[in-house]
Image (cartoon, rainbow, N blue to C red):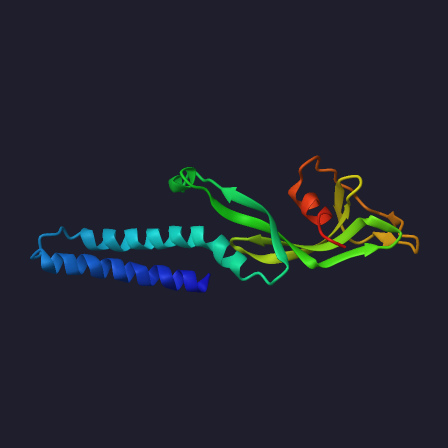
Length: 174
């Protein structure tokens, strides 16, 4: 975030410098308001470019074995350009190397899931998935397992056919 702010300020100075140079070349014919408008436009363009580049930049830094399974795009009235092309504001990544199963219940899978947001720190959640039933549940306090692989205290969520998270977890090789 700090680097994006510095980049925005630098682009503002660069935009003002370009208008200053154009004013010199034109012999001072540009109106006085052209320099702040040039600086402002450069800062807006830099901010928009940073919004659109965030997802690809963050995805490129993910370690080997992390698969993006879902993205959330954003459109906002105060960002009219997002109606032309929405930008990715959040995404969910799956750590394939963290896959764990139990011999007695191979269709039950535990895996680490990470939630990334544009202006927030990444959050990790352990997800339990029942591939036979097509349902999932976050592992939280109160969940217990016995020696036979039976589970108690789970609040299951059945997202329905085609859920990207359940599909991605169930297709992983054990």
